[in-house]
Image 1 (tube, rainbow, N blue to C red):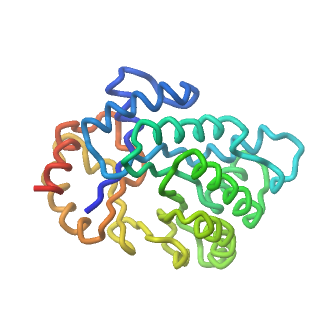
Image 2: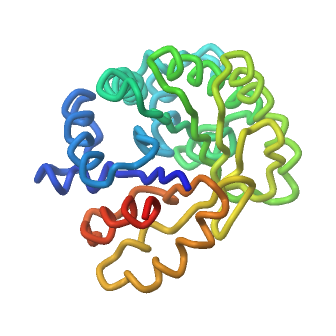
Image 3: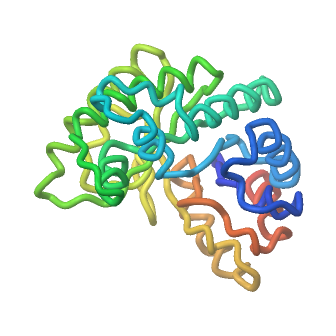
Amino acid sequence: MLFAPVLSEVAARMAGAGPEPGSGAVPMAYRLRDAVELVRPDWVVTHHDQGAEARAARTAGDVELVDVALAALDPVAGLVELVEVLAALYPDTVVAASVTGPAGMAAAMESGGDSADLLDCGDVLAELVSAYVGAGASRVLVWEPEVGDDIADEVISAHTSIVRRLDMLGVPGVLCGGAAIDSAGYRAHALNGGGREATLVPPNAFSRGAAGSFAELLPGSAAHGLVLTDGPVSADCDLGLLSAVSVRRTG
């Protein structure tokens, strides 16, 4: 199996630091390096912030969404820099950049009082994918919430721009979540409890005292090839259990 946990909160705990947003790309990358050294994941996941793109879009002011360059606006600009630093630190390891999917971005925009067209979200996110790949990402994780059947077709259409961009760039993408979304254009589709070539495990699988339950979870997950955590592993996790995963998967 390939193990790709989101380690940002664990990295902050190990560094004795607070939440990462706004701390700067270089400090974020170097504190993440300590967590990577402990856990030894197969993929280094850059971050998991499903509101970043919406916050960046709002800073653009009175500009049509399709004309917004997310990669040039904070906080996303800092995340692009984070990818660049991590790619330099790990030239021989997969660096997987996280992108919020069109449905997730539209929901984040609407929660802040702004309307957003799903297709427009897909277009600007495709440009962001290019920026991440240009910065050194060798995989892209696209995170989506669960969506209703009433909008599933529209969400699938919104992913077309992202899938085409990934294909053009020759970079594999993994759709994370969104069980109702047709993921045919992605290399894998990670879902809770199993998916296509990938699975999501809950971050609390690494909580103190959960060793037995995680041991039972791992064999089933391993059959799916790629195992990701469904969000950041909690800062108060059992570090011994987390680091033991690398031993179990190779033992």
